[in-house]
Length: 402
DNA sequence: TTAGGGTTAG
Figure 1 (cartoon, helix red, strand yellow):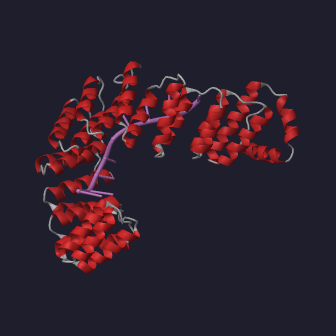
Figure 2: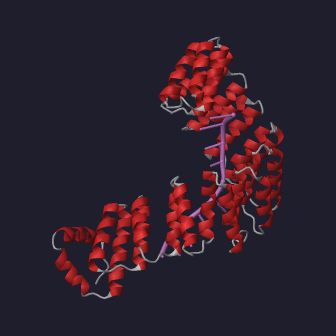
Figure 3: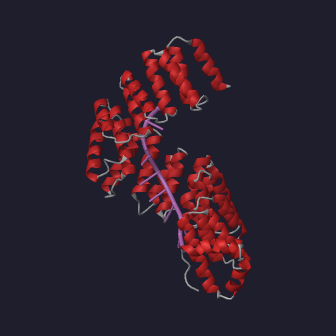
């Protein structure tokens, strides 16, 4: 049997609907290794077409011809995931009598990366109950799911298992995922303990630690960690620079902010959107709003985060009128504002006591489904209160706590 | 077979 080409998948579709039995008879005469090669090639074609329908056709044919083999079954699951259907992959996964660790990991990580942390953890727990040992790939994705779901005790239990299996600090992917989990739970002491035990630290581990300290309000420690990283000869990347610039901004530390800006240019990360946005925020926080405006002008296509960063920076620096001009311009460009953007625009209205503009933004809050958002709600209450409309402030407040 | 970690706006 020759290796099938694109046309053979079409041919298989044709056979499936018309002369299935003739093809099956011919197929059964071939040897198993050839069948494996045949199906592998067909699945490969499904990956090119990214069509779940094709995966289904191949699967149906495999079942009908009696050729279901673990190796091929795994390939089918992989193809279904790559075609974007977790539910179809899960159906195949549940039907397989023996599952390879790779497939457990593929299923779990697909759930978690598609914001289905609960399902991912459910499968992880079933894997452990089934006596399948999680490996470094399993741990590198499940810790994120525990922090997404706020399950600290379960996360700590999984951490314990990774220690027992000798994977806690021997694999930096596992360690950095652990550091990130503890940081998200606000447990920086635990994050630091894990990090200290890692021999081969890398940029991701350091970045997770820096972000953790910064988000817990310990920007001084974040800056110190960054210094340690540089001293150890580990190069910062786009993610690290974006984070450390925010740290400098929080500290209103223009000296270090400019020093980092120099490093960003030297490292070639200046064009990166996150670096630019963080630079803009750092300068705004340090009171150099004109530098922020200059950086903003260089953006060819600013996204909603960039626009919002500028608006927030302008309001912070007492440039509310320009903030509202930029806000209107952003809306004209059909960039959808979110809770961050709208609450900042409302802050500008509040400072300027512009109730009519505030009312228009109130309508947008409702239009974009943020009527129950606490930040937008608080900004509305504040705006109506400052503009002397206590009745409206009260009504928004009551709707919020209802 | 082939699967994995960290950024930017309150």
